[in-house]
Length: 456
Ligand code: FAD
Image (cartoon, rainbow, N blue to C red):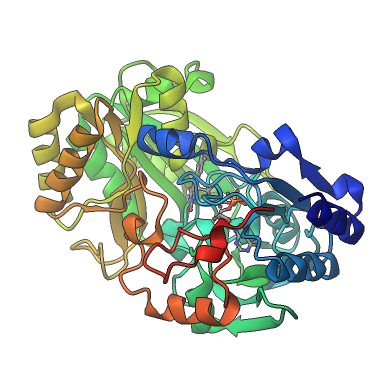
């Protein structure tokens, strides 16, 4: 209503309250990666976007939304890819990227949630540290958006994902109440608030433990034989004497999609990307040579980081390049299990080029641990999409052979499969969001709240 808008303008200032067509860009993320989500979410948007610059502004605006039963979603960099931030019930989107102060960087980064990971990585490297893990979208993603919507990425081969061990030291959330409160969740308690799409409170500050920085060398190798390349890549990944930040393996023709790299990567090859300690680069190149594998690219990552970054082609960026080259392509997120070689064969025998293997190796966890503890074989295989039924059939086949799927074609936390037990998160939501106004519908099993459909 006009009354609501005027009240919000009085709190934030006119230029920080966005209405009309311009709310569209604040209401969307990379949901269109999924043909299924694209259809479901295309017409959903917030009625108002609020650009907050401080905790005080945030608190006042949220108290107002609470009082008037207006649902809200929080937006960081908007790079999520499951429609996590797309409001299902209209209402307000709060853009929190203006709250981006980095308070301190030593062994721990203490920052406001809107700080970009790029900014943190640069500040950390100046002090001899780096992000323990970061998404391939590290240039545009915020630290808060990563903890609320992401899982892991570059660095996860060495330090695991966001929920691994003590990577997160604390998160501070703000509740949505008449008088919003700040709650600091420390150590393992903080895990409750991770990857919950802003349904369990508004994250305002984080403390994340940093890793020791290395002078990383970015390396690319190609080969004609899939099994030989994978065996060699896995051996290097498992060699603890070689510090590494990234191990990505792409089945031919995936690297053909990486247009800007075509001058370096010969066409129609299986390809491996590594980031290894520069002190070990020669050793890795020599071991490739001995295995008959061709080395085609070397470039330092740099401190401060300087493009080109091979990270721009890994993790879910791989999918982006593939969709650019062929819009009929989509993807899955998989843990390939202990018998990953056997599972690749089963997938290829059944689906041929309908499924293209893209592997991201990470530090083993209990769920996907391989026979050599320490390295898990997961990844983001590309799928040539025809129908939703066919996609579901491929998912069911994966699960039948022991390939775990975190389904990216759903916007609910339950459907994505990253939350085997939601009870702790539901308890946090009870506390932080008594009216159920925070990103309603995303924690789908949470008690429904009819207030969520109220209009602004
Ligand atoms: P947003 O998209 O703005 O938000 C993500 C979710 O968190 C939304 O539900 C939002 O409502 C919520 N949220 C944001 N900020 C807050 C807050 N302060 N309080 C409460 N809730 C909040 N993810 C990975 O984990 N690893 C990858 O390697 C990776 N690669 C990607 C590559 C591409 C090309 C794309 C498009 C996505 C990729 N993602 C990856 C997904 C996404 O980039 C990450 O989840 C990213 O970290 C999100 O950060 P963001 O700031 O853009 O968050």
